[in-house]
Picture 1 (cartoon, rainbow, N blue to C red):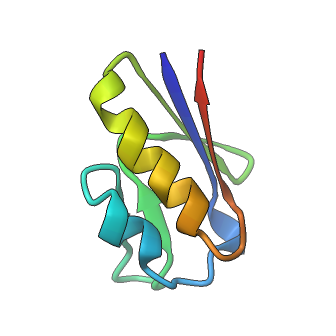
Picture 2 (tube, rainbow, N blue to C red):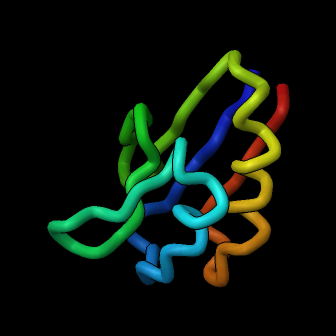
Picture 3 (cartoon, helix red, strand yellow):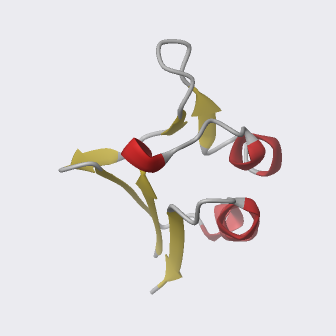
Length: 76
C-alpha cells in the first residue's frame, strides 16, 4: 500500500510536484495550490491510500522536490 499525504494549507504553488507526478497532483485554478487527486481531507491533511505501486516512484520524486516539505510518501 502506498500512502501519500499533502499538507495543502502550506503549499506555495511552485508546481514541482505536478511536473514530476502529474497523475497524482494538479494545480487548483481557484487558489493556485496543488491538489492530491483522489485524496481524503482530514483537517488539512489530504491523504491518498493506493494499492497501485506504479505511483510510488513519481510520488517519492514529488516528495523530494517539494521546497516546503509538505508531501510525505510511505510504502507500507
